[in-house]
Length: 364
Image (cartoon, rainbow, N blue to C red):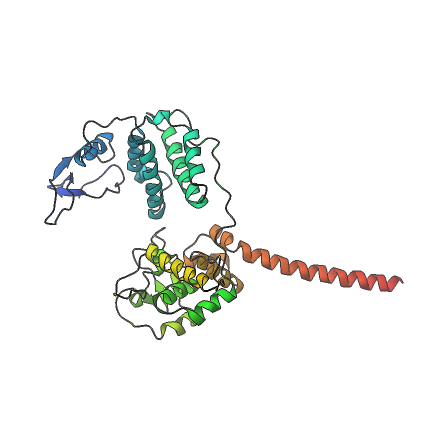
């Protein structure tokens, strides 16, 4: 067993870790194990070192030496440091950061990191103004990169990359579905789209987890997400199968694999399922049916949490069921809490009005 002093690195595609005679080696070989496998190239043994990433880029076909002070080098060093961070990044957060850091690489990768300014980040934010959620995700990744880089002994930047850059204000997030929207799905949706939506509605799982749910994951009357846990966080909630969902599932075929399959028998990805849902909404809109306007798949997670809240469950119990922190439960039920507060306010105002009327009649 090789003892490694530092955390394991999430290796890029084509990089393979091999242990031979108690020693650890790294190689780059694209399409390994296939007829089109490329040349196997030995890499430095420490994947946390800048030399490792420089050698990898050269093996990938980048000609010439890679400068150690570029934005590319800064991002490489940051990703290599993820396993050693005091606050661990979830797999979902890592994937989110990678996607947005790829945008930074494409824009500024070969430029000196210390030449990057908040004005450059702000310019990207302005270009992404039509998709404020995507803009905010980009800013979050750059903020994390900047905060880490400035704390390093050999820091490549001498100032924050994002100072003064503000995220866009969003319109309240993904709202829970209304009862007419839920009823429309029950009355009109069929096939895998119906199954996926109802699984999300009654389990509160994200789309990436709902498309994985299948009969082999049922344990003691609920879905156990197993050793892999949730795709984004790794949490392993046990989701009870509510009576409404159990009744729906009675007619579903019981066989290994997920419940939600394409017409060719292939599992759905979260992205493909979202595309199918969007296409269905657009088709309904062309027919003049607007009941699902404003409904989002992620809003089903808020809907599930709100329904559990209305059933009287505590925030802690709801969090255990759907795999969510108590703080996030509170955030997801903010609309429900406002509604309940409004109803309570009506009761109080009505009681005060009756008291005032009674007092007025008593003094007349």
